[in-house]
Image (cartoon, rainbow, N blue to C red; front, side, top):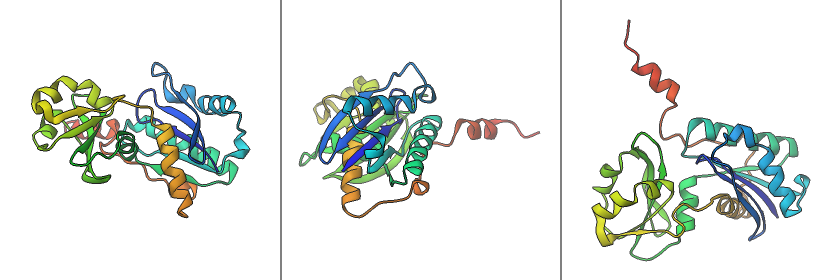
Length: 227
């Protein structure tokens, strides 16, 4: 079974082609160019690299968030268009779940998934034994660190940005995944194919984005003084 996967939760993001449990190709996007300027071209390029035709794809997969409102909207809309056109299912995968999977499951160690949310904040969740134990949130790093007491592996671009703060707050309780901010499209494809194998084959319009922060336009509207 072939899967084409896309991640737009970070400025660069990534895309991948997977066959069964083997990632055939995975490539990073150009973080200096917006997603709408690169899609769907990046997806067609990774298919060409893998020597897989679009018609061969059985399942499409896309990261549902968290991330920028614009990035998620573009990524999901792109994959919905491809899946609708092909008449194939589209499986949404939490970027946090993909990060936690990429970090592995070490006993007695929690996993903190941190995605840079800009403005001095991070999108974050926490996992233990492969299960989410702290729901997705967006907060300043210092507030999150005050709630962490056990040894924790940090993963995601937010962990890279705030690595010195994490180390200063937690000392030897803090560990960092290697690489600290991995490409996620291959892991998203793996999770999606596992879901498909269990019989979960949703239609493209069933996707629900994971928006932890409201869109900037709404925040700006609410910040305007009432006349």
